[in-house]
Length: 94
Image (tube, rainbow, N blue to C red; front, side):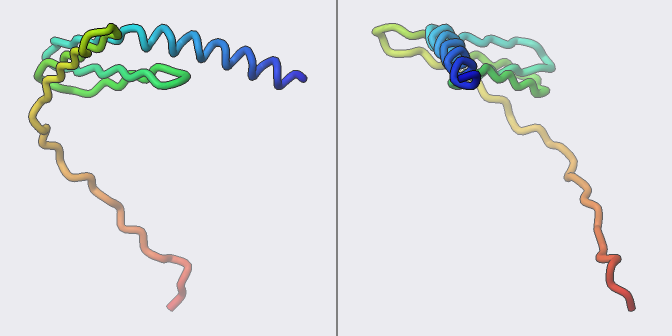
């Protein structure tokens, strides 16, 4: 009984968040060093921030017209290759 009340409350909150996030989602970033992307899933909102030197514009609006979705992508950033440690099997003897 305790768990069913908690699950019902959680489902109600999730439906409320989904209805708010699906109405319109707009993200605009014009900073020289930061690109912010916001995506909405069924129960939470995730924000990912990465470094960039270009602009990213994302617009989504729910209406009867065709949805406007504009994304400006940045060129690839050249990063150094990740250095992996060599792990030797030290359990063997001899």
